[in-house]
Length: 404
Ligand code: FAD
Image 1 (cartoon, rainbow, N blue to C red):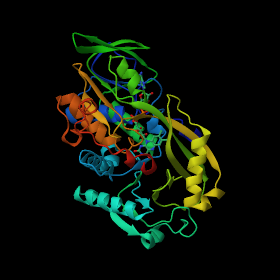
Image 2 (cartoon, rainbow, N blue to C red):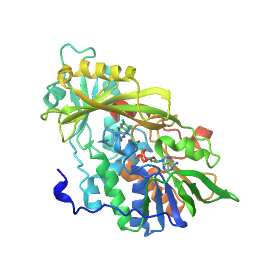
Image 3 (cartoon, rainbow, N blue to C red):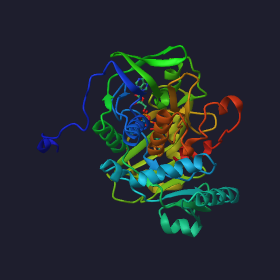
């Protein structure tokens, strides 16, 4: 199908690494690329390199189930994800790139009175934050999602929290759009360049060692998602992070049937339908620490069972593929955007299973931190030392996987 497009040019250059830069970002995922973009676009900086050990889009940014939303409850998280959703809403104009943002609405189902109370409380917090939330009763859910099993399902559906501005975006287009925008502003995006060491002298970062030689820089940002623990260890840091596998699945292409994002409040299951027609769904972590970007069969069975009890009709669809990504899990489920104890070394990590929706705001806030040495107001709570002191923990782990 692409043979008629031989004149297409690459979206970004393929430069060799220079001997030195002002800023090096380790990791060319969504967060590294958006950080580079906002450093160039907002702060006019351009002597920046993004060093990616594989290829752009090969990490979690190209493996996630593409859900974007601003339905967090706790102060600290709520304003950050609200900021991110607003950036999403202007992203196509900002990047002049079709990231296929589809605000089709997200419905989190609840199955007990207690869950209804918790969702009502969360909905009020979302509205107070300036975002949108509608509490649906059972019939309200039926109006939107008539294909669910309302009669014989294992966990009766009591209602749902509807977030109309939530939805999906085309994940790899987001990476490509930020990569092109950063490249156009002079950022060097260097693929197949693995960072193997971090050079530090006198408490100040001096640069990095890579598979393509040493590169000097006075500021280095670590933005490597599932590899955060390993890369931080190169600077002698021990992070409060465990890496776990999260799997996802896609079926053959079907006619449009599921026109929202739906998450099941009793099992670990959530689903949407891609623009190509595939049903895209997933569940919870594989629950053992691992750096393997693939999962195991027990979680496959668990996710399929949860899907079948909620909407038995999906049993007719054939699953085409499953895959996994490496999640950087923090103890409180909230991320880290902070300085480290080493001058010039910054870290952006701990996105758990929900960092795709954070890509625009994380880039904006991490760029602000690197450029100004002060935290961005929307990310001021994402401090590394909260895990040491116990102050400022934002325990919102439950807003993850099944809600993705
Ligand atoms: P990545 O794309 O993984 O980028 C990190 C990069 O660092 C990688 O490309 C890696 O190669 C590179 N790197 C690592 N070590 C080195 C090194 N030494 N030198 C150079 N480069 C290095 N989030 C949502 O908000 N909504 C969802 O629906 C959702 N669903 C998900 C479903 C699945 C199956 C998975 C796996 C994740 C999901 N997520 C979701 C989470 C989200 O994808 C991640 O939190 C987010 O993408 C992580 O940030 P990133 O894009 O920068 O990561």
